[in-house]
Image (tube, rainbow, N blue to C red; front, side, top):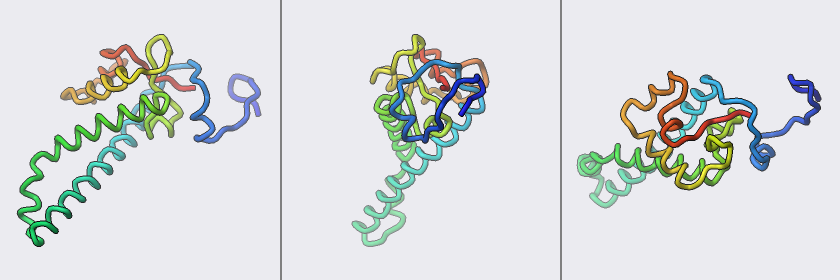
Length: 157
């Protein structure tokens, strides 16, 4: 099969693509980055929601079904969400070749500016930078802050 560049390539599935060594072709587009953000936000919200739901159910069962008591300790739900978000992005980007669930779908991955793989420190710092207020709006510019601060880029094969 010929691709748009005239090279003969075989079609690969998402799982086959995980084991390939990243090769730099171009920076990911803004639409790819938006899809990444959307899917990863859904994943973080889903994981956080399940975690908080299990906490409420556990608390309700220990307080004999008292709903008010179960929700009284949920004031730290944002802390739980941000903690899960940092863990999600760090583990996926470090342990999965710079890829989160969103990046798997768009076939993009995060790498250092010299196109070497992310270190654990790079992945963790990228995750922490996402907590900066209004950081999400930096994606409307050339590069989001979590890329510029950590000297990383997101590339597409």
